[in-house]
Every structure is written in C-alpha cells, then in structure tokens.
Image (cartoon, rainbow over all chains, first blue to last red; front, side, top):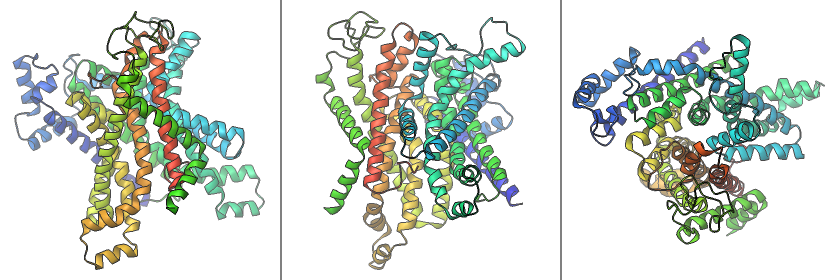
Length: 324
Length: 282
C-alpha cells in the first residue's frame, strides 16, 4: 500500500515537472526579444504576415499570458506540439520518428555506465592503495573533466579515421541492404562508439561513488556480524556490502538521466545519430522554434520518466528503501 | 591564524590540489595577459589554412580552416571561458544561497514551498534548458551566463538549506534571536559565515561544470558570435576533423585541463576546509 502511494506521488511529481516545463516554454516565447509570432516563425522579419497571423491565432499570442498558457496546455494534452516551420510536418511526428534511436543510444549508455562504473568501483575498493585503485581513480578524474563532444570527436578520429575499425557516423550503413541479423550487427557496430563515449562521463561518476560507498558500508555492524558468522568474503561483498552501497549510486543514476539525455544532444550531433538530440541541433540551425520547444519538452519528459522509473524499480528491488 | 595554517597544511598534503592550483593560476595568467601573449588577433587570417603545428613560423599550433592562428584562439578562449564560468557561478551562488537560506532558516511552509520548486527545477534536464534559453534569447554573454546560472542554482539551494537547517538549532542563533536581531541579520551575519566552507567547495566545482556547459553551448553554435571560445573552436573543427586533427584537439585539451585543475582544487579545498563535499564522498 505504501509502495502504491509512493508510486502515485512520484508520478504526480513527474507530471508537475512537465507542467513546469510547459509553463517555461510559454514564458520563453513571450520573454524573447521581439514579437512572439516572429520568434515562432523563426525568421527575423522575413516570415510573411499571413503565416504570423496564423501563429498568433493558433497559440493565442495576442491574449494575456494565462489564456495563452491554457491554449498551449490544451494542445499538449491532445498531443499537438505544433507544426515545424521548416520541415512542413507535425512536430510530434518528427519526434516520434527519431525517438527509437535516442532510446537505443541512451538506454545502452545508461546500462553500460552503471554496470562498468559499479564494477570498476567495487574492484578498486577491494584493492585500496594499490596501483589498480590509483589507476581507476585517475581514469575517473580524467573522464569527469573531459568534454563529451570532444571525446566523441577524438573517438571518431582514432577508431574510425586512423584505425578504420568502426563507422564514425550514422545509424546503419546507407544502401548496405542488410536485413535480419546482419542489420542488427550493422546497427550495433554504429552504436558502439557513441554509446561508449556517452557512457564514459557517467561511468566515471558511478565508479567514484561506488568506490567511496563500499568501505563506508563495509565498516558497519551488520557486515561485522556477517564476518563473525563465518560467511565467505565474496558472499559478504556481494550480498551485504554491494547491495547497500548501490543505493546512493542508483539514486544518483536516476537523477543523472536528464544529464544523459542532454549529453545525447552533443553525441548525436557528432555522430550524425538520427535521434531527438540531432533533431534539436537541426532545429537550432534552422531557427525552427516550434520544433526546438517540442524536442525540449519531449527530452525533458524522457528524463523525468527515466528518473521516475529508476526510483520505482529500486523500490521494488530494495524492500527497506525509505518511502519519503 | 591557526585555522589558516591548518587549512594550508591539509591543502598542501593533497598533491593533486597543488598541481591543479598551479595549472589554474597559469590559465588565469594566460587569460589576463591574452592580448599581449597572442601573436595575432584570434579572428584574423594570418596564414594558409590547415597548416599543421610547427610548420609555419609564428603558428606553433597550426592554423584552422580559415588560416586563423589556433594558439591565439586558445589564449583568447581562456578569457571568455573563465569569465563566463566565474560570473555564472557567482550568479547561481547568489540565487541558490538566497533560496536555500530562506528555506532552511524559516522552515515550515516556506521551506516546503521553496524546496518543491527547487526539486521541480532539478528534474528539468539542465543542458537542454540552457540550449533553449540561449537559442531564444540569442547567444550573448548575458544570455549564456543567465542560462548557466538558471540551471545551476538548485544544487546550491539544497546544500545551503541543509546547512541552515542544522545551524539554526545552535545556541548562537538562539542567542542572536534573544538579543533581538532581525532574521535577515541572523541569516547573513550569524549563520551564513558558518556555512561558507561547503559553499566555497561547491563554488569551485561549479566553475568547472560551468566551463563544460559553456563550451558545450559554443560547440553547438550557441556562443557569443563576437567572442572566440574553446567550444566554438572545437565545433568549427568538427567538419575538418579528417584533414586537420590539431584544430579540434588543442582547444579540447585546454578545456579538459582547466576543468581537471578546478576539480582537483575543489577536492583540495574540501580536504583543507574539512567538508565532506566534493571529494570522494560525493
């Protein structure tokens, strides 16, 4: 029962955050310098008057802000994110078309970062003070400071230009004509570099955190009890220490979902990965603000969903998680 | 005095922090002396395009796609990166301290309301919000600083609030209240000075993350068009990566080095000031 209530509250929080973003979107269009219709039309002074009038009516731009906000929310509730001014298509359709690629990229990177980060952190914590521990700590410190997009460019340079091992751009080989398993492998080869690069920064964070949490948990009384009972060290490490040390790491990983989706904008731009991030970048270049605001809203929704799901999954996995 | 020497002793013991401080001072010096250090204007075409490093006299790091001096770009980029990051950090500290102090000192519904708002804000993906804000307001120094501050203040607010929640229980606060001091005086004169250490540590780490965010925005073409920045240089080099690796590599190294230095200094400060923030414990 408590869990249901907790789940309900987390969902409500997620919806409230989405509402805030919708409000921010409306405010931004208003607060921008110049005529809001002009902002939405995207071209400084070059859009024709009829089109701008159409935009004004559609978004109630001439009405007071509350009215404008209600109109916008009503449209959102019907799944209407507006019309892309450049691509002559509904924003929602453009986004849905790109969604699977982004989910594949961020999902893979998320799993990679969490699994490898935790593994490295545990490994380092069992070898405190050795060169392996120092090496992992150095690796984490370095990757924590490296700009994602630059790491992506270096990865392309090394593994795609100098050593032609992996494709450096795109989702699959254009005109490759792959089907079935061959296509899956082809996409996997394209996915490897962007997912690895996106995972690196987060892997560094999770490794550091796990490395810090393990000794703290290991010094607690229930671990001493387990040792006194004569349990094998490997079992204590896995079942007692790691399970408890994971809690802050997984919580942080959920909170980092937004940062990961934001990082996907940079990674997709470098790798020409056909996801939402690349769409956002194109919208920037074309000054297509309806598309820009739409992708922002969906990006935020994704991050919030990621966060809520991580929390919910973890409540199920860990019976004594605080429901507050 | 004793606190000072204690701090210095602990800071010095952290070799990474000392190295970071030295690197940071060098970057700062380069930023200050940019116009005198750089051989050329960073925007001027001074040679053939795509000259590799060391091939032409006066172009130690080579030239870019338009024949501009890469080294001059690096030196001038240091100014913009540091300036934007410092101002953005100052603004978000101001915002965060105000919200956090009010919430933590007053507690009750003020705290509940402000913190719900802060949490909502934290759920929004920061970098994406910064992109949208800068794009809509047009990229200028002010809009970039504003966007970074807008997405950075919530973590400061939460930190300051938790410090205030515990500090306001102390006797000295009760004494000040009994002495009839107003709440603003107590907040700024009594409690805030006691919460400075973790704020300083967070500030130093925030300068680092602001540099990363600014460079990401510039990379996407959302930098101030009148300023040469490291992120812009990497972004401009992206399409010519195959012909000319050096145009992208050097500015990226500059960013990584500066951010690394700041993180190391932040850890050193955390050791020195005896806070648990920022170091391994985070």
